[in-house]
Length: 150
Image (cartoon, rainbow, N blue to C red; front, side):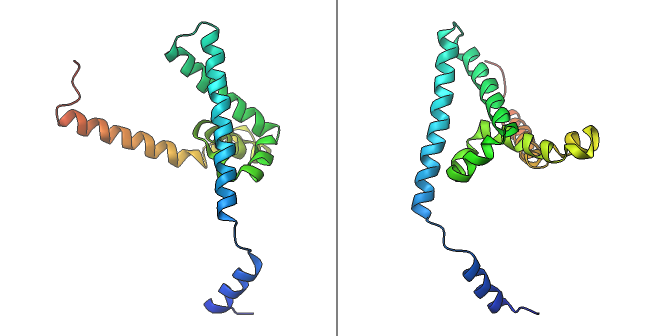
């Protein structure tokens, strides 16, 4: 069976129902906001334990990465994402999920060629771009004279 472009578009429209855009946006906003609220609660927890703001921010980041990884390992992050959609792509927990998911998926291929090699399949390009962009930005800033110590 050979499909032309028009027939393919008809089949695609028939098999994939339209997405409820406003409902999806609202759910993403609410779930993403809830994750951020948990992050604020974690930050308040660390500050109440006597950490300064900068130290509490570092402890909060570590805690949120741990929680994202833990929920991924328990297959709960996936269930949350089915309902929350884009709301679970909150940077720190979504990043933890993007590292742990491929590692879990490829663990049957071994520690080195499976987990270690596939761990950064999703997050790797983001890291490379972020690091490369920050190096370029730093060089430009330095060359323009704005990189000196005050």
